Length: 255
Length: 264
Image 1 (cartoon, chains in turn blue, yellow):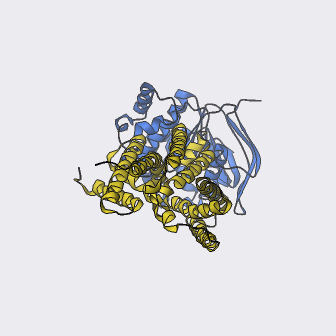
Image 2 (tube, each protein chain N blue to C red):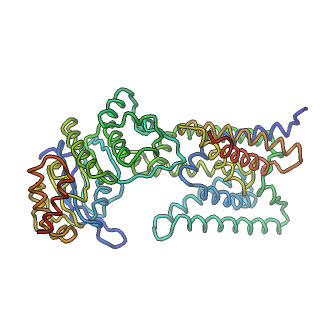
Image 3 (tube, each protein chain N blue to C red):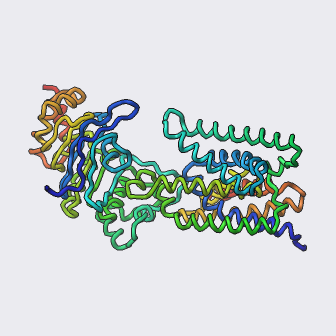
């Protein structure tokens, strides 16, 4: 049997008599980036919460590598203004704090100037990187990111995904992330699961992006498959400039 | 000026209580649990009357009633079709009504019950015996708070993050509720049922502006609490005002000063 960090078999979940997850099978290996995509209400966040152990599945089997350390970056997080806490303190909560290690990691993720700031004063993008820093300081075997690009502008998103795949290369941890936008994460992911209560399709990102089930789910909401095939072609031609992608999308759409 | 024995006991009791209500009150402010504090306070009246009825230590009776209230709250929150706000309102006023009815029954049976003392506190009648009890309880609570502080803080910052990192969130929440029940029971003697929540949240709120870390806020809240007790007891001696409300009034004045004085 091959090694895995986390394995789910036949997971099912109901919330208020509504089937939210059905027959989910997945496994994450060390050093692998697995991306969950799916429309709103498809159960992405619920699946992440089940995998993290925050809620219990109604049926199915969840296995974790013994002693698995998870670094979790939640989707959005509100810290009450009444709680005085600096970025540094937040980073070091609950771990044996080592200032050298903390500032090294904070430097790597570009948040080192923020360490003395109140946590509530940082911007959305900065907060995402702080959460990432905090997760990495725990030396996780598995990094779980729920919509990491939320509240980050489109240039920042590209950088963020590059950063995440860089982290995987440097630390060798597995990564599970949720994204609403496959074409943005395409280059940074090894495996894609397209979710809509059940797993519609899965596999290599480029294969998934052309899978009929995937197109059925996303095609309508994003003005047809042309956007996707087009974008897909361009992500091979262009290395940077996501804004350019969008411009081309527009052109393509007019054809 | 010679400080009378009863004034000294009142001061000591007040200081002991703010030692625990300071840090606990900060967490109440961070986690927005003020309404829960109110509900506990209301249940304290029921606890007291039950203690009289069954002839047990009132402190114990109030703590037990608070525990039952916390348990009911947790059970009722499992179904998500009512907000905790509504559930708390029902428990809070249900307990208050039950307490008032029980007290009336006690009185009709010819027991002498001083309702005003429960509602507004009875700081000046604190006995040495009560003080010994109080110090034991407060030190125990303070010990548990310090022991669990990191976990309490993690839960206050973000419950799910804490849970994903292996903090026993449910246990921490439960213990925190029990600690609050204990503090409400001991604070009842100081400021009375109606004003207990104020003793928790006002010093913590006053402290907020001057601090940059959770721990310094807890310490600063204790300091604000100490000055409130000193000021309140002094005012009570000077102008013969009721001690509990005077303490709360001083803390509220300090709060306004902390908010408005010289915006740095």
